[in-house]
Image: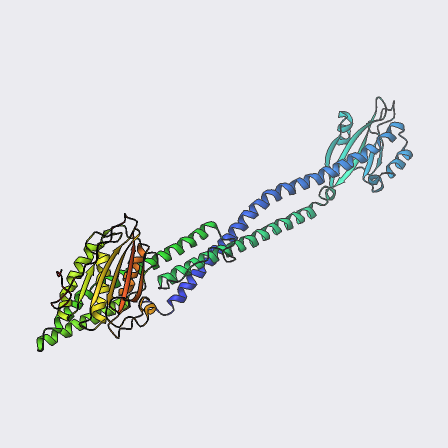
Length: 489
């Protein structure tokens, strides 16, 4: 027994699972995109930082090289001051020139022009080695560039590079790269959320449909094409198609089971008819009345079972086992002939002397013939004559059952399954059983008026692909004495 609110809790559970799946996809997208963004962002940022550093030192080297021609021409301090002032670094006080001692002088240290920041040791090292070098000074770095003044003396040009110049533009670059990374993550989250919404929506529809089918809604189906499933994974679309196929199969199996129950119950009508007729001939007495009451009660229960059965499946399997229609008709007419004698009915059977093979099971054909003959006994007055004729052609075997009754008021309604209201004991399934048997072979069932007896006539055509069977001569089969003469079966 389900507790109150159980369905709502199931819905909440399903919704929570869907949200968990959706957020799991979002988290996976965030993690994946973040790792990819960092994999590109960190090396790119380091490269930007290195580029800024290289750019600063390249600019300093260019500033130092600009003083090379002036030093090669003169070592005059005024001329060098003017040359330094003509450069950007010199105008900002970032260049110094360390001149060597005059030729022939015994001085160890020369003259320095401008604001020097490098130590004398570093200057002497650069001058002595004759190569450019970079040394660390307070607040930045100093680029020391040796320049030959003459064949024996070397001057050193010092260009100051502040720490700020080494990182100029790096912060902006990191900010831009971070914004790009965040934008990529946001886009990935949005795409993952949309994909997750489609995925969760498809999975939720499948779960809801499964619960509805389990609750008894056999008409529930899932869309397999259209806007609702566009963008859904192919696996979920295949699952939806498989669910629909399963639901159709369940419906067909249930319908076939109900039809089988109805048909088997309807076959009980034949022995019930015999019991009812025999009970009617028991006469008076408590035992006879009790027997008739029991038979009536049993007949009503069978009718109720037949009415409760559902309509049959449209794709009932075709019958592949054959039988001899002539032999079946001889047997069943012989069975019903005893009841016909008791009720004073004249009867005749024609065309059943030669084999008439049909592609149906014997039990199904017996049930169909009993349904046709049982209708005659149930729906016509006692003493009403009937006839059964068999006609074999090249493509079909035709069975005609006619009577001398009043005929059908509405033949179309009589052929619709379940139309009977039970007022006259009819469930409306007898003719439907016969019709489906005929259609299973490619034949049909038709209702009309008997040309010989004037009442109803039922024409059952069973299609067959077997060899043509010669139609035998017509021979009448009499019933009781005083009727048409001939041997009784």
